Each structure stands twice: as structure tokens, then as C-alpha cells.
Length: 308
Image: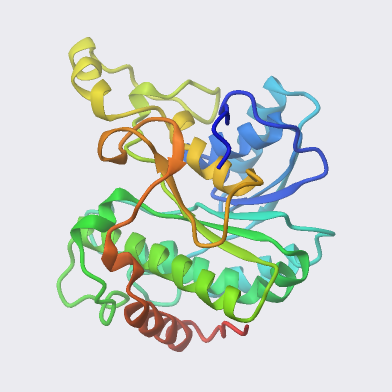
């Protein structure tokens, strides 16, 4: 692996096209900004057109020559996913798809437009449907698919049977389970792509523990109330800004040395902060039987087929 990767000085990416879901805010915004700065054509696929416009404005204010466009995508609606996939399939080329968008911390249970628990339905099922629908184009382009996981996968087990319709709702558990599903799908997809000899690749990346208090401000996009000195001092050893949280996502998307099935994250203690590096997931994220059952369930729930 390349040892001299410098997150703040990416190699030129002119001629590359990267689709970033949820690229209008948070980690997705800084992923989009960093890719655009290096010359990539970035397609922000997001639900809110006003927020996407603000993100594009913020990027162009810093980098006037940036090539950034918008595609409407609501991952909580399978109809929207199907429409967006049809439009994205018309792109001349997709070098990477960063499946970043997500919902976190809904204290009361909410459902997607199709009746699934919101976090699992958006974070996993929405992206599953998008990847399944785009797979012919991704395979034809030899695209790299980056699934965005989380350290929270450590604390749940791969039982996805009732994840879309939980009997008891816990916001944290539903989020962590959705992220474990994202990772299980990403690793299993890598196996299946390799088996069929597809030029497309599937990798997983995670941002560590990224906090707004350490994140650079961007007008109209990244704004937050200042944290106290003691809050910053207590959090600094195990947290970083969302700009740094985007580093593993960006490296996973564009580093030529990234390989099918890789897992990228911060290299610091407990993978909470640091430079982007190859890291190890918990073993249960690699359980192929659980991942196969997850894919079968996802196909049944969404009606989208993963044809390889």
C-alpha cells in the first residue's frame, strides 16, 4: 500500500467521476469537497435540492473550477432510488460510488416511504437497492463501490431478521445494526464480484469518531455552535473533525492501491481518529452466511435483485 498518501494533497483526479450520496452535508460534504479540489467531477446525490445547492456553492467558493453537479436521491424512497439510478446510469463513466448518506439518532421510531424502520431502511436498504439497480453500469465501468461503515458495528450481532420491522425500537441499536448491514453487504459483494470476475470492486470505509466541534466551518453547510474549551480538551484524544473523518472515504474511493474487499479507517487508537489506513473489522462483519441471508432478505424486502 502507498505509504506517502497525504490527505491534504491528493493526486490529480481530473477525468474521474465520483458519485457521493449525501454529499451535501457532514462527512459527505467534505468527501465531495476534497474530491472536487483534486479535480474529480463530483455528483452529489442527495434528498434536499436546497442543501445540495448550498454545498455546491460552498465548494465553488473555495475552488471556482470545481465540477460539481446534483442528482436528486431520497434513499428512504425506493421509487426515488429507481429514478436516480436510471439517471446515474446515463453518466458517461462512474469511477467510484461513495455510498455515504445516512440517518442517525432518530429518538422516536420513524419509517421510510416503504414502511421500513428509517435508519435500516435508509442506511442499508436504500443503498442496497441503489447498488443493485446500478450494478450493470458499475460492472461495465469497472467502478469502485465504497460502503460507509461505523465503529458501532462492534456492539451488535449480525441478526437482521427483524431489522426492517423491529419489535422493540432502540435508536442506537437500529443505527448500529444498519451499519453492520452496510459492512456485511460490502464485504460479501466483494466476494461475489471476485467470483464472477467482475472489473467492479467493493470496499468498506469508516470515519472514526467525527465531531462537529472539530470541523471547519463552511457557510451554509458546516455551521455549529462553538464548544467549550473543556469539551474540546476532553474530546480531542479520541475525536476528529468531519473533514478528517472523510479521509478514509476519499482514499478508499480513489487510491490506486486500494483492493477489492479492503476496509479503511483511521489508524489511531480504537480506529477513532488518525490517518487513513487499512484496518480490521470485527470478525462478525465478515460472516458470509449472515451476509448471504442479509442479501436474500434485502432482495425480498425491496424487490431489487442483485444480479451478478
